[in-house]
Length: 229
Image (cartoon, rainbow, N blue to C red):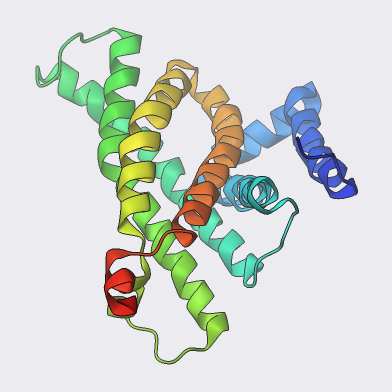
């Protein structure tokens, strides 16, 4: 078991600050009002900070310390963009499922649990994998910028992707066994409180993708193995 370091207390203090903001009635009302009026900006802020904290926590668990990666600001911006995307698709999938139920395309119209489950399932089997692929490619692009190893092309990024880790871990495991149940619970909550819960789930999102990246970095891709041979 790893001993707590000073950096752990700094990370926990940042998390505690978020909890205080979201628990205190006055600050919670301000936060919720702001995110309701400016959902894209609110989504950007939440995910750029909290998902980046998840990235750092993943590094801490994998390497024993918090290591700020090169291009950290760029990576935080990408998380912010993902937060804006999620702010949109939450409504798209939930309202879309409701419309499909009313049209007889999905069963159990009027059942909150069914709508939440269908919305979560469809979202995590369609948008979820694409979002993870988007994050993977942008992550690799930022890495390539700092490596300065030559011209960066889409093909070169495709070759660098550990598809086994992306498909087997991120898509087949986390999307199905973690995110579908997690977002089902989120969608069962009143819309105002989904903001609060999704903010903290973004830490888990950053943590899981960080772990997937670390797992993939320890395994050579089939193409790399064939080159080595």
